[in-house]
Image 1: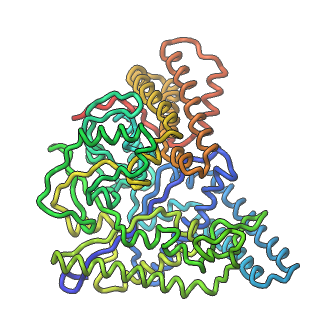
Image 2: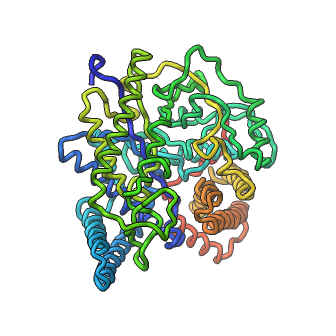
Image 3: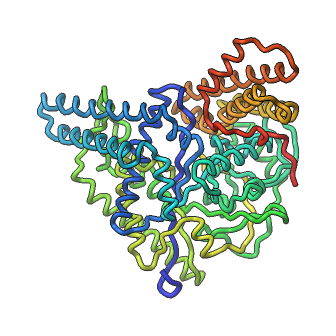
Length: 574
């Protein structure tokens, strides 16, 4: 594409994340999540990328891999457990074939054979093509300058509600260190968990009501060398994002009112658009950080379960499963069809629908870019970010659709299929804006993560943040190996406690009991290890049982083996 014949750029951004579940349950909540996502999403996406490369394409795409997901996919226990899971799914498919054959369910038999073929292929690819290392295959594609890998906060902590800047700094620094350890290069892009953003202002703790000035996320990102992140549409375009939920949750309403009074946006002499990146500046001694904006128009085509492509009646239904194996044999049928009325899935009906949906999506991108160029006389960029697990896990046919889009975009001489950092290099932004506080959650505010069901968890988080700063400041610099072991495990427990997944799963009733138990478990581990650290740091006797307990916790929560607890020091601005 050239300035003369082009209309603009397009960039897919896929955010890949699961919370740390190794050693924390299997089914229905735990490592089953990881096995499902690996078999239905990560390997199928790697497969379509490699297929495109073998066909002579360069499928430029930006993919964020969260540190917990990377750590789990590289964990030895995952490799064995994943193969056992695939064997179980293959056996279940064979059992289904035998079961359906008894009753001469011809179409179900055919679909069961497809499941056997699918899982057998995934197992073969995992063990032989990718050598049981999914992460390394992503790394290989990045090393060939085909895809770009972003990182994310260390454990997906929800930035706007963390109580200490030391926690924000630790989430970013530890994520960066781990990325360098795994991918042998500096990360450029940062995915903000839940697209949660908070600007600089005199912040008020929603629970303690303590007020103190805090810099915005761009300060911490710039300090650690990150160049860009993604925000939701409403963040860039302005307007109040509080939504209806504030009236139901007094804590959120108070936080919103405080933000409105304290936040002072920049006055702009130009109209904002979601189709170009902007800069956020923090301090003169730090470079500005760029933002890309999620495009709402194309987003709805995929995100919406009722009106988007995944809701097409011909596609495989996610919810209805055949037990004991859990394979799916029914199609969506209709957006509001009762699960008992779902009709049988016909794989031969899918290709036509994928062609039509991919054509619709590509035409939408072309229309947006054409309109933007005609109005502004310059190239724009359509950025389409999605949860990676939507493709394959939630929408089984999603990877096939994705392949068509990547192929067709690259074939189009007027569209530049690009990654985020590549676009920044070609078209460096020069306009500075400010952003309001918010997220891509319901109503664009914090209500999914802070409400009457979850506020108790932040009491735990804020208490542990205080204690972590105290222990690191008091003991870490002069600690021997034993004390360093205790303090570093304290850091792991705090990071796991801070995961935004727990509040999300509680608020959505997806895995409420599991998440409440995980919060309580990491809090209890933290408090017991804190007491142990203080006792040992003060040269008091520590019982042998406590050392055994430390060993058990280290084995259970072994994320970030090379953790530098200095990241949790009380944070002081430059």
